[in-house]
Length: 113
Image (cartoon, rainbow, N blue to C red; front, side, top):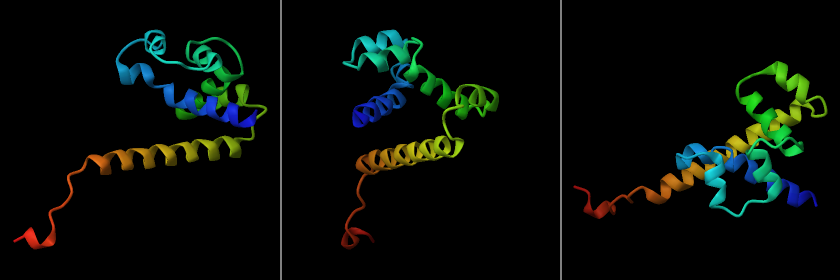
């Protein structure tokens, strides 16, 4: 059960910028994907735990401490910060991997003169 929730939270974060990446509304973007109902609902603004988590992360990104204090009462702020920093590390590593896979390889040293 916990791993399923973690997977859904991962998808929630990943797809939270889907509309911007695809240059279309989140509703239209989600039509193209098989996304768990709770994730789709949260991204579409349906109230619930998943939407609360998304709102909390968005508030954290904006440094909106009043919203964090109001919505995040059940979450230890150190846990929130740690999870957010871990997600940034993952995103950075994914970007580096993507960049490295597209970067042309250097010619062999014997060909450089």
